[in-house]
Amino acid sequence: MRHTLPFAALALAVVAVPVVLAQGGPAVPGAPDRSRVAAGTYAADPGHTIVVWEVDHFGFSKYQGIFGDVTGTLVLDPANPAAAKVDVTIPVSKVTTASAGLTGHLLRAGKDGAKPDFFGPAPADARFVSTRVVLDDDGDEAKVTGNLTLNGVTRPVTLEVDFHGAGTNPGSKKETVGFEAEGEIRRSDFGILYGIPLVSDRVELKIHAAFEKQ
Image (cartoon, rainbow, N blue to C red; front, side, top):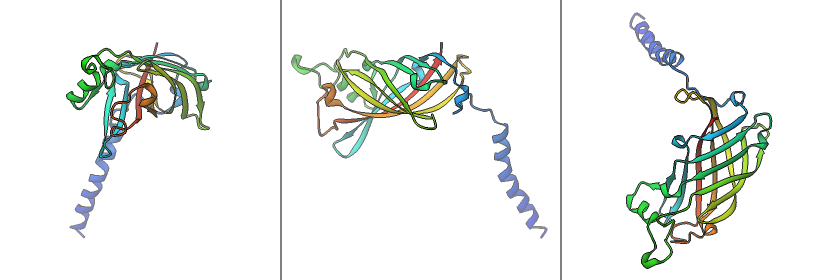
């Protein structure tokens, strides 16, 4: 019995210490609490908003790239979330991948004056402008439909959007809201045909967005 008690005490301490540390640790400033969202016009935080795109490569693996430095506005009223409007611009020229060679291919000029395989050396910015917002019953998820302009072509796109969190950014001291979204496009709809079907026509989109109140 005398040997059992010290071991039991040690086990209790091992369990209790992480709990105490967790209780005393700093809380993150954002939380998925809709009551924290203030009405107004928000600006995209370009340093913390990214569009991740993913294609299938030869049927062997999936490959991802990123568009960053997103700018634009979100007009939001928690009393009428279905009236929200978003207008964002994505600088295609700043696309990046894990391969310098592939990134260069995306942005290189067409051979001998031909049309580029993908975006070319001076691509126009992409732009998404919402036209409709439909919320689910809980108000935490929404289908956001809008017009996406890419490669000089405009097509309707619908995104599945989840509310991620809201609060005051300790760095900028601004009220901030964050969302995650998923969607897909067919690049052939935007005139980007190179490599289909070896590199998939279907492009999956995953968006992580933060907006700061102005």
